[in-house]
Image (cartoon, rainbow, N blue to C red):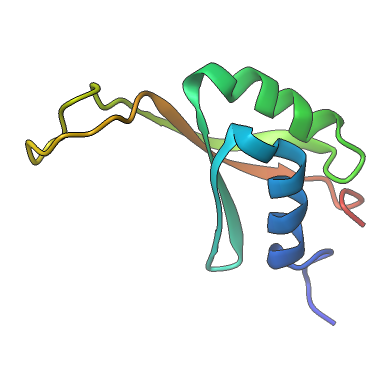
Length: 97
């Protein structure tokens, strides 16, 4: 038994299934799940994570945004990426149980 109500890997799978193509990535590091979504999908992704029966997130704990202009990166190499938001979310203790 652990102090975590659900394993991070199980939560990762639930979030990936819930968000589908809206998720650019869903990763686990140090026991925490990080979700990356495009800026255009941020509001809908937040609603899905709040309302989906398998998630029921109640609190947004961290949100960071980054923007890369299409065709340019910090290193000067070509890129097609656009704005994205990375959010770490905390679930209530009963969520995902």
